[in-house]
Image 1 (cartoon, helix red, strand yellow):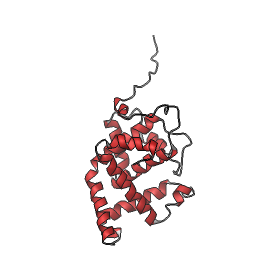
Image 2 (cartoon, rainbow, N blue to C red):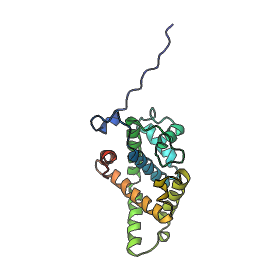
Image 3 (cartoon, helix red, strand yellow):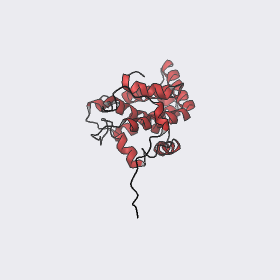
Image 4 (cartoon, rainbow, N blue to C red):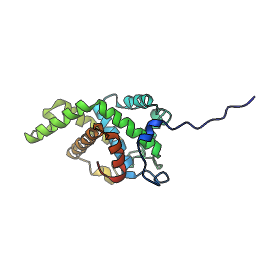
Length: 201
């Protein structure tokens, strides 16, 4: 009788749509980029009450469950964000980063209408010099974002201290909403992926 030996899982073809800079495979995924990916996912969770489940659901739809197997795996990958309360010392692999980017952009596309509505509401309130409390849906999103950020990030880290006030966190949330909208456009996935290396978004 022959025992079955484990075989390496083939890399999902969808990941090949995201090019990697020359000689990058051997390097650690950028610290800023790990932070950016997690914050984008945090914004999605603030938009959608079932955000965590949606992330796992899309991973399955895109046949990425071999990379993001369950909640524990997802939590471990997101804790590579150095701002996290329980930050992991290891980095993301390129394959893991690609999977998270594909999931985030696919979810953003499904929320395009909502994202546009919230950004428009914010612009109109700003022009009228009104507070965000004048728009229930926007106020609710910002409240959820602040709650998620404060419960998951390490308040002693300098990058987190910069967002100690509600005002600063609201500004961050709106900026991330703009980046999510950027991800929904033509070639948005590729452009967001490229920005993780060159700092442009």
